[in-house]
Amino acid sequence: MVQHALDRGYEVVAVCRDASVKKLDAFKERIAVIPGATNGREVIRRAVASCDGVLVVLAPMGVHQYASGTAQAVLDYARPGARLVFSCGWHITRDGKDVYSLKIKLLVHVVGRLARLARVVDLDDQVEACRRVFASNTRWTVVRGSDLEEGESQGLPVWSRHVGDPILASNITRRVDFALFMVAALENDALIHEAPAIVGCNTPSALAHAAARARTDEPVAKIVQAHESKLRSDRRRNQAARDENEDGAD
Image (cartoon, rainbow, N blue to C red; front, top):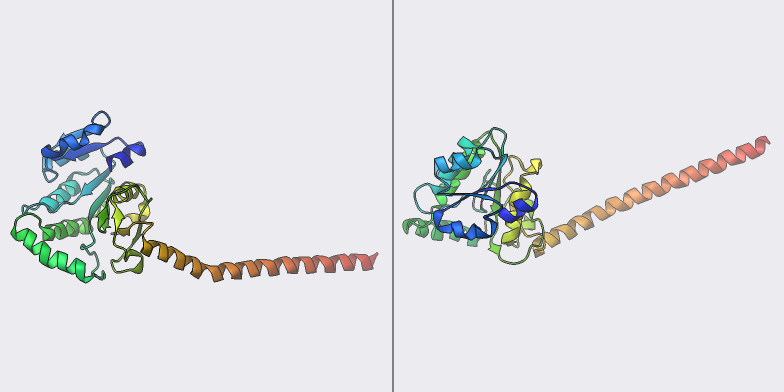
């Protein structure tokens, strides 16, 4: 996300856990880094004080309300009117209309519960974090990511409002493109108060959706072409009639 933001000319302030600060060494001359936990309210207050946009990874680490604490701090301290873009997984639902595969259900209900018992991850806290975002009156977007893979960028991911929609069936996005979507959302007001579920633009399901749309649009294009052809024919016929009348008058 840092590189995408810099590529767009943004000034970047990054909050990073002490143990991970070195990961940002490549950018240290170009960005401001504030070490600290992202659920640290004073850390967040300092970081977002002058920001017009905030990108937030709702990491459900541990069992001490890390995700909800992060979300609440951003909601409390972001400037009025700031663009807030949060990230989470597909398991988050806004309206209860998402349709989940057995794999996702198992990951959430079985692996998620085991991870919480081991005090490693708390998915319920990420749910609570998103609930608070959805209920806020800020200019928020919650980007729900599919499974991720490494690799070069394929371009801006495509999205749909509900998991289970055919366009999302491939359930894979390049990590770099997930970050690209987050940064691009800052400037896309159509995504305000949306929770887009994304998938890579070159995945089989995305390409199949694009092809299906092209086939659906084809008859419409043919109707338009036929209508335009008829208009041209009518104009020629009317012009010929006028010419004939003028010749008769002479």
